[in-house]
Length: 363
Image (cartoon, rainbow, N blue to C red):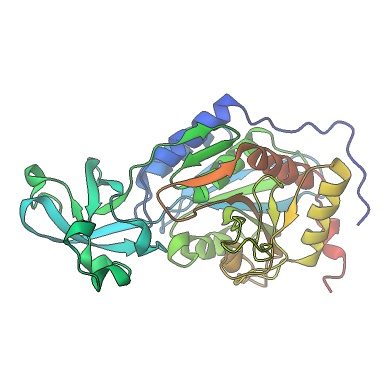
């Protein structure tokens, strides 16, 4: 696709105010199914930016900011508010609680992790038998969730009711060129949409969908896309980078994405085949504007685009993600420059969108 850079295009900046917003979003506790706290922060930030917004019956925030002029196209930007975490299932004696995992978390990563439980944010830790007390046979097998407990101490014995949600207690911080925090997946997508709303290209109507329950099966996006009925859907997320060296020293050819090489543009994943017109547009804009980007290597998984593209009569969709290491653990690591270039690529691409884009043959 032939793209000519717009002379008056100005990239949104990602500086201290945006990083502070991401910190607030990341530190907020909103496990899938209870997104109340993160919803409050988002509404406070966007209510003066958009023309209208509502909270639907599932808990999605659906906001609209109209552009100007003719031939505008309705573009849905979706980012999920929820995070992986835990649900208390049973109270034992002296502040010990059984729990189940909410979303995709590797049990091997849980022992000794500090957690925060409930709306009153009680501090605890996920405990298991110390290695000194285990048998040789036990040490050969991964610890199962059923053998773990959330320990809140005797003062909290039986005060937490079954159904109470919990998550990791990690606080976001800068680490050299990187950002480290919990729930970067997908609070970084939320922060990206807010940045776009603050610097909206006038040639598009932005339909901002801050979705719920993505970690449990892309549920909120399905409802949001049906309700908003956009012309185009763009899911903004974080994707596992898997770019660490191999243990035997051989070349890592299964990296999926790499930190420091820009936003990940998805040709396809386990839930979506990207609309080729959108894939062509994003890559052409990246090339013309000299914005670093990378193609996410084929792999499983999925984003909100997996639900968006199947609504109504079909919605042309694509995913753009910030690569991150250690996803769905107590801390995800991303490069600040990758986030900056994600915002730049999405904003620049939006500035080239109009309804003529969808008149071309999809192939």
